[in-house]
Image (cartoon, rainbow, N blue to C red):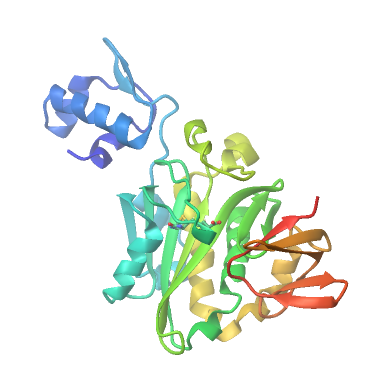
Length: 326
Ligand code: BTN
């Protein structure tokens, strides 16, 4: 019996007796008890056990629901979605799609998981990915025109994510160049794009997105920067993970399908209107080097426009990080 079979029976947060669970699953009460212990140990979820009442997950758990996600898709997203993989646990949804890309899987394949055991962030960082806490989403697309045609794509993804969040009732999302999604000045999510194939010809791109929805207190200790989650930003009005996932696919699949035609120029003004650091003093950090200036938005290729005493220079992405000057 896997936990993805048992957990839905406890997802609503109500008590269910061991016998009730055993009957529903066609196993013994001992098997249920062993699985409950394993769930608590592996997922970090709290499963309460009370004599005479049974088991419950206090507060319930918001599991990904394939039907709800499909129901939330608009006609264009349905047409563009090749396959939706909803996994219980995986090292990284990005890595999984990179593996599948190498095995020849089609564009429009999407992967999400309840948990990542080796979630990847930018600049070699670990992405904290607790069970059923947040959204971990990767999309695979193929481009025929090589890496040059992808300029600015990850910035356009940020705009699409802000649009999806707005559609879910989360206003005031801002973007931090190049790939951070902010709310109230703290990091709500991030984007990691990875590529395989021919940099000058047909290449496959995996767009990975992490959005903090309800970060368990125990998991947050590993995060080394100011962060927030949708529960903190919106309280009870925070969207559920399945509704959010559908809204994200409604924005991201059309973006990926049309980007070869429109490029970043079609997104530049929208990116500028969401820029968290517009005309603010900033410091750019690349490894040990630091460059101070004023952020003046981005150009039509997605390069940051940094104004220093020497004039305005274009800064391209990569291993660069931007901070507000203190
Ligand atoms: C960042 O450092 O800001 C980027 C974080 C990207 C995290 C997402 S979660 C889904 C996908 N799978 C990964 O391993 N990373 C990305």
